[in-house]
Image 1 (cartoon, rainbow, N blue to C red):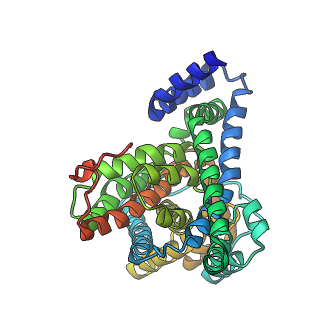
Image 2: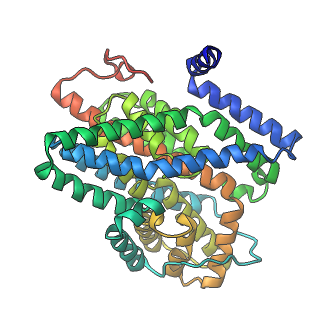
Length: 421
């Protein structure tokens, strides 16, 4: 037992990022040279499965506990977070439209993809979101419907705030702490999970995915990187009036890296919660804003919808004017916010956007098929952008209040407060 304890202590003493990089390298090497070791992929499935299983419970418990304590801290910071989420999603779609005009892409279309649920318009997307809000709370937790989870958690939290005894509130707080501890244990095993995920992708696809559809991938990834490294920092600077890159780097390193491999904003919610805690943020705020961000802060999804739609338009010879492009930006923003409530994510919203230009559903679904082919790279970068942005703007809104209140900022923003990140 002492030996096992020493091994665990030594494991925990190594930086999580270093451990993840080691897992990444091992996954690539095993995928390239020992692809027959299929049992390695089980590690990735177990890791993502554990995150997806604990994330809905974590969000539900944390939000209820935070609201039931009666702290009343969903103040102007919360409004700022929502505004930043929506603004950057719209800016991302504008960047995607501009890049698609600057570097037009045409596609080789062959076989059409199939799907069970394809929204026919923005109205249907909004209807899905409203219906998800009032879905059965137990079903919402089991299916990972975060709109429903948030809705019921807020309702129950506000109800318990005025009706629960102090003992009940203490139990809720203890339960939230216990679930948070379980999440930290799962996150500590991320290197093994990422090794399995990388092994699965490399052994199945090799490195060819980076060369096929290269121009389309370059436009997509280029827009996402530009948003992450230029647009989002500019927005953060305008709010904080501080050099934002130290904060941007920490968000990408601690949130974006894990999200890149899990390819699931929902699965990355526990990682983001832990990152916010290490950034010294108010748990009452980030316990609500982080799961909300996983639903409406969809910069990568907006980029994917806009770029793929304009690629379809260029392929079939549709002349897109400036007004239509602007409408596409608004449509992509609204559609992206509803992506998490539609089976298949952002790719299945492409036919809806294509209908803006009169592109047939058959052609649009062939574009969706291309999206699934490049999804190994596109979806990974998209999720990393979305997830890192969730933490970034939750932190920006919080630190903005610190500046107004004269509180000491973290050392990486010019203050003297030490943080474990």
